[in-house]
Length: 333
Image (cartoon, rainbow, N blue to C red; front, side, top):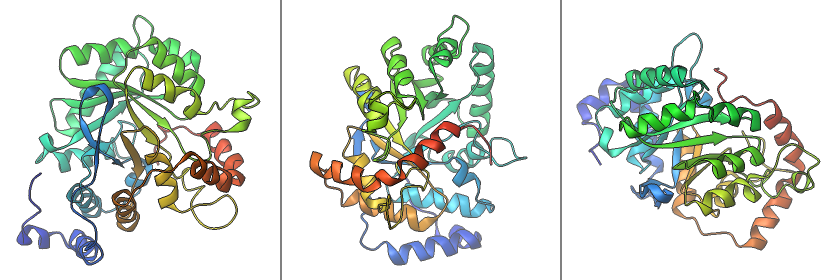
């Protein structure tokens, strides 16, 4: 891990200096090393919390503030950084990848850098990756993921003879990508079938206390199968590296009152699952610090404790399911 900025460099960036100075006042109790877990058959050790640089991160207006947030995450032990070619803020192009490229160029070997591609055809996918390499200022990616599997028809397009899967497999052979994966938000059945058909290295899936063990989904009355009961076992069977997201239910599960729980409780639920890394969207310093603190003091939940938390957030399930039906992760802010 590389050293922090020198004081002279630190003071050149006023906004970043303010943020990092305030962070240091409140981080005395947080060790500088975040626990790492094995990313399945890849053998890589990744931080149990990953930095999600999607819509929330792209909503940051000031570039120095964005870079300071990345710097603090790295200093506190996060080495898994998640992005996508479609993460941006209009009218800017690939803002998330651009920011991560600036940040990672001085410490590339110390980061696990994962991006995602949206095109479903081979040529479009290769062009997208070419752009990712340009904006991320690197000649290789640790992980390229097929972005946001929607349903079984989408899976057929992905796996066609001229589909995106052929492109990412080619890039892995060429060592442009060390590993390949797939992501999904709202169809556990399609994801479990994708993992059955294809030998991905990793899978990134939506997983939280409201969606997992969803009794409505289990009765097949809702087209939102629970990932915990479908895709998660399939990934474990093939020793894939498992990454989780939407731990807070896009903010719909966090807070006080019916259907709400603390961010620490929700994170504890996800870390108690057989996942390597929980990817959390980030746009402010305080939640980043709180999540890292929670991870540092993590103890696994027992099955009874998991059920109690699921019951606690149950009143928020309908709002979360409605969000999933409409959600498009590739939409720019």
